[in-house]
Length: 225
Image 1 (cartoon, rainbow, N blue to C red):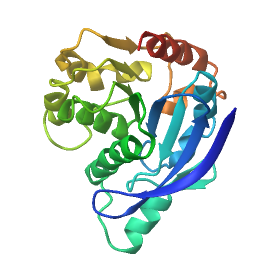
Image 2: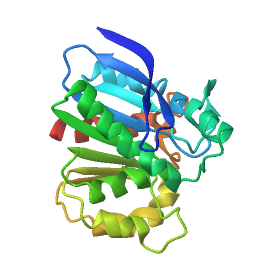
Image 3: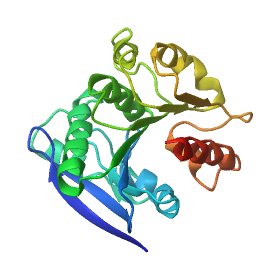
Image 4: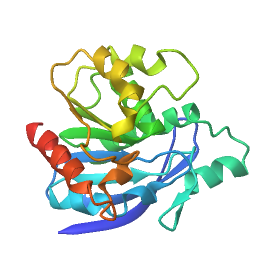
């Protein structure tokens, strides 16, 4: 059985984060889903239920840096703007940190996998390097050095201990090649489509004809964990 509900919990600075919880009954593994720039938790409306059928609980959150997608407005962003908080990509890192902490406290899962899209996929890799013992795997869809600082993500990636998965559109490989090379774990998987592909987690959406290649890569990676 699967169930979905919308919940709120505080970020590190007290800002309320809105998230959709997709529960897979009996599962003790959580995948935490973070969206790309200008978007919301709606990026995962189609993806999260499919991950449920594979046996994973999912929590798709609204980071403070975002907007709307798939008719879902980013409520965390709206709250941040209303009270004058900064909403840059890097400001959203505390939302990722807070989400991991919340899930650990509220659900006590056996495993936590963090999954990001575009800018948040870079922050997921940063989290995995900065907090190497807090999660069990990291998955990054179209990461890159998006923060105006040389080797910012690469320097954190050098400390990752957990299995990692990186993918992107075909023409984005150069954006993350150095980051991937810096990751010391031998348990790292990359997938680049033979087709043009797509940027971020939307590569898994059904409307894109080459989504099956991405899904196969995702499923194979998850099976190894």
